[in-house]
Image (cartoon, rainbow, N blue to C red; front, side, top):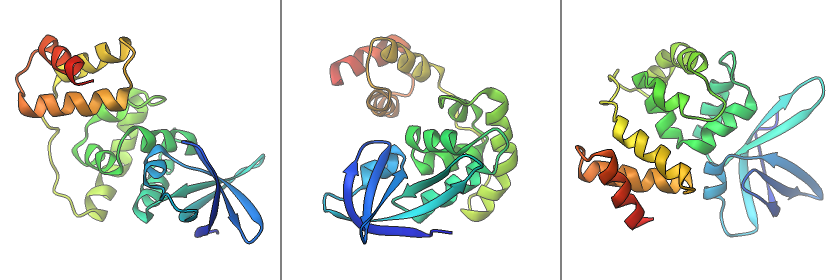
Length: 193
């Protein structure tokens, strides 16, 4: 219904923006991914998706058309509403979501807040073929699941570190030394965080 909105950025938070478009202020829900891509200038253009429910009309905005398409795919899955889809796009990069769905990586999808095992499996079941076809990917098996990495991440989170920041650091450490133990990953991460 509303394909995009462009105008002056009036307010900006990690979850919402208000865009003034010819005197009308549109309150638009965004993901952290879109927030990170917002320009420093006052003028912005967001691709939008309007969700109409009985009790509310909610506008979701995306910096990239591809992110909006992933959002639409995610909300087509039973058990994933617009809020959870936005959380997914805030927790993982769109490419990570696509790769996780294509490879059947239940653990990555399930690691997102609000997604249980059944919902993760349903998302993969419903979207795997669609994702493989749309993004022209070859079917891949799940990359060897690294439990050390996940345990280290959990420990860092318990210690109070930001998950995204810890994830990037741990990812880098695991790439450099794939066979690192949980203790070594944590020690290296603590030096870099």
